[in-house]
Length: 142
Image (tube, rainbow, N blue to C red; front, side, top):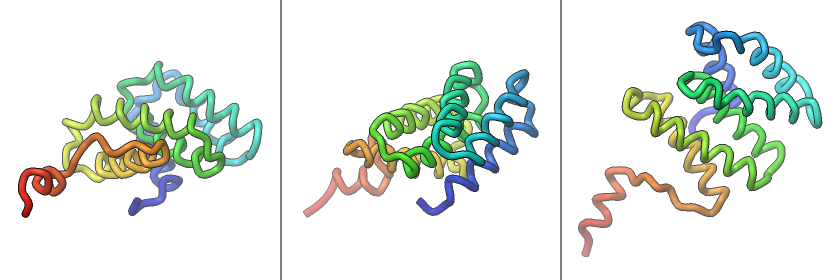
């Protein structure tokens, strides 16, 4: 990855706040993020879990979805557990399928695809999306 997921998470959350996409959940999300960022252990885990619960309430909130992907990577680095890798891969899959077309060739999509590859790598899976270069490599050759 060529970016810092913690910084990207803060930027995505800030954009989510500015855009108004958090709606009635905005203060709860801000409070949970503060607990997640400031604490360690059980309090941070509870805040993380609450943020993940809000995922289904805000499926169309692209910046919030992006934020969740990045904080899930933070969870992976804090506690390397297959559950976090699976959660991250699921979030990335949703983000790419829901927002990928409209974000084509954007930094946001590139970062999500990079982190998706890392989640899949942690699960021992190959990336399901081949770059144009890789597709060409399979078609030709010596």
